[in-house]
Picture 1 (spheres, rainbow, N blue to C red):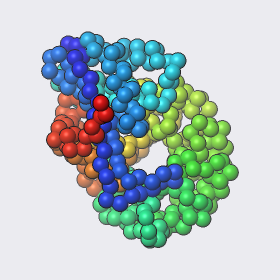
Picture 2 (cartoon, helix red, strand yellow):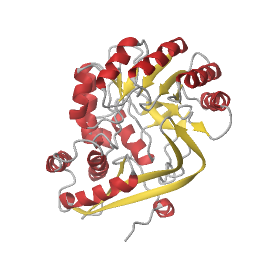
Picture 3 (tube, rainbow, N blue to C red):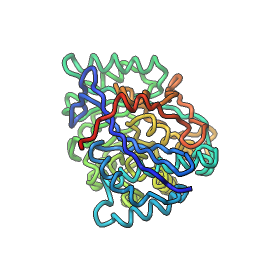
Length: 380
């Protein structure tokens, strides 16, 4: 069996209303999917996190390393591409592109052997995961504490055990929003906050200290991802667990995160940090250092499916406990017309729990009509 074709699909859809996090407004959602075919008729699908119009040409350029290769040789292919581009891409677009390729190859591998990817990773420890709702972004107009509280209460009614609030809009603004959301969801529902690295250590510590009474489950990306010293300062100053890692890449990038104890919770994105091959290694490193692993997930159903396959194999955070603390799935609840439309069978939650697909490969089938509907036509 050999790889016969590599294709990229840039997708985009407009939103009914814009929304914002601390650093940008969104009026549309995009996705970049990787399709790899073999000469015996198998097709694998992957997804790249990052700017779709930039990751697509990188994958297209990598195709020359893939054609005629054995798609089952995932480690060989990963190491070859990484080594050939080491001088130019140890992080960022190169690794995001490699992530989508790697996920597609694992999809092929599972289909070839007729088993879910999790079987090839050692077997499942669970067949479903609890999900928390990511949402609570800012909108145009309205009073944020009011509409954020209403939205958060809706997630609780839907069965989610926890919600994540976007902060980073100024300390007074963040405090007002967080207090409103906590009051709306009650004391039993988990509340995370995510600043998307909007603050420096001084501001992050001030905000964290003023929020500690609200029982915050974790403070995500309080400071810029490259400033591990700032992460350590924030972590040392607060009782709130500190999370991050969606902007880090490969086991080599996470090495300093682990050895310097910069985080309590790591959040690699499987579509960015190196794919299934690399994120399995990162997860093993996290377990070795006793650091929790809860993946960042913000893409389409392909990224969700790939994350679920890995999560099936992750150890609990409390391995010897009679009431083990399981890893949790980030389930984006913001508007994303592409997310589930590209799947023939959507990956949805039931009372905040998501079943891990048990079909071959990633366990999903792609709706090609949706690809055509959302496709961005490439310039000649």
